Length: 464
Ligand SMILES: [Zn+2]
Image (cartoon, rainbow, N blue to C red; front, side, top):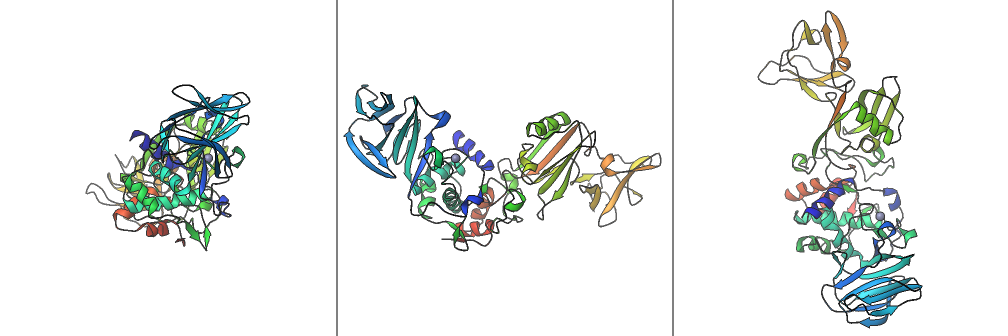
């Protein structure tokens, strides 16, 4: 449960690169080659163990076709470098069962499921020796691959229609990712870089059924397959790809989300306070040159209210302007839907007095009345709280304070604008482009079908 949850959380930061979806390279391919151990995770002596069935066929893989050289009846095998090639040993007796002079071999288990490195997998395995390390690649059918992805991207206990929407997303996403590891000899990795895949351990009847019931279905825009981008929660509105990654895709158009229950979403409501020094350090780590931070302001929002530009000014007047997804990633924030301190939020007037008080259009604000401060320091809405009388006035008005007769703007008066620390308060978790997983859950709970869910989050698409 803990593992599943942790993996699920990672979905919130899953990258999505729709550009690679323009041309599908998968064609009729039904086998996905998944890197399980490679580069720094390549192993000295990977093992296999039957879960069901008995024994293995050992041989070679040509393309995605397995050819057996010998069959063995052992339950547990160990593969390791020996001589110029690879040896397959009976793990229990140490007996060498098979030896190659070349640097690669393939093993096809007789059973359906096979243990490898604490997880059980469907499909075959291909081993490649690099120096004294062995790379392990799982050759698995696309639908079985998706069954191994779904429970790590969305809780298998969620409503079936949400899982089905996720299955189509995962299939459509995978379809656009098949070239990412070509140079390493496989199609996709098993981590968040592609999609988290750990075989059959966490699959349930519910999650497997979601894959079976959407078998072979993809998301299409004008008869062209598109990438099913997704993320954890949108906090109230998804965002257009052009405002996040820069690529303009009509099907990835941001919209206000009336379905998602953000308050119930994991990390759906968040707040982080950074000191000026921490902020400076984060920006410098992200490659931006800036001195002591003087102010932080949202200087541009998108049509649906997400942050599109964040301007940070240092004490010498130098500015760093973050835009698009950098407004989230450069500072390690959860989403692009946030406010900075009081600016852009609603605040209540406290301890107001005529001697040193908050005035709106020349009228002293009463304690408890609300004012909404926009990000350029103007008030855009006025309400009431605690039974106290609301201030009159509508539209955008400048808030000023007076101290001994002098007036300053809210940017100076508000401790939010300048100070020793800055609080970012936001909603949503992830890049915000495509399908909100918590939104899909909410829609499923409200009776929507998986294709209705996908057609809400992806504009103008068909599912077939
Ligand atoms: Zn990858």
